[in-house]
Length: 229
Image (tube, rainbow, N blue to C red; front, side, top):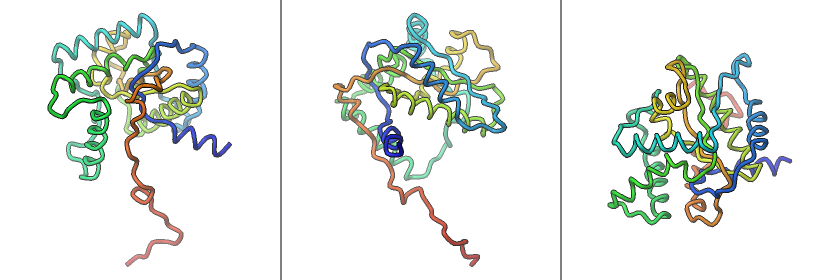
């Protein structure tokens, strides 16, 4: 059981090519129900998720593509990251981006190819299902942690069911489009999208897994109290 769970965790990585095979609603419902066992302060369970399939999925994709093609500047509803990041974080991000473009055969100076690569986010990478995770507009920082636990449970549950996913801050960059499409008011904050489907295992892009930091890079062990001096 332990090894099986750890294998599921290790197997999760972003998938960016999906089969056209439909995902049963019952499977999605089972994963989302299990994911709700995520922890939350005082059992508040603040997360909300919209599941888009079929015509609803296609309509949102079309509107997002229109915004992207029209040059609308994306803007998250919240601060996604600090303006200046530590050099090691920037280095990891650059390496991951370069590796992804390399496996897709997109040259660094291929502006059209890079833009087409970004546009794939709004086609949901061909996935038949798009999830939209959202919170109350006045959500506190800790609430994002709780939704993150829920979203991670969703991604791991999908892996356990033979499915894949790709969380997408890019979709949340067009929060106004998403709210209007789904009939949400200004009281909802769009946190992220998530493309879901059966991964196309023959697609080279799905074989790319960014290098993970070594355990020693992010773990500190304290078997004795730290010295005061």
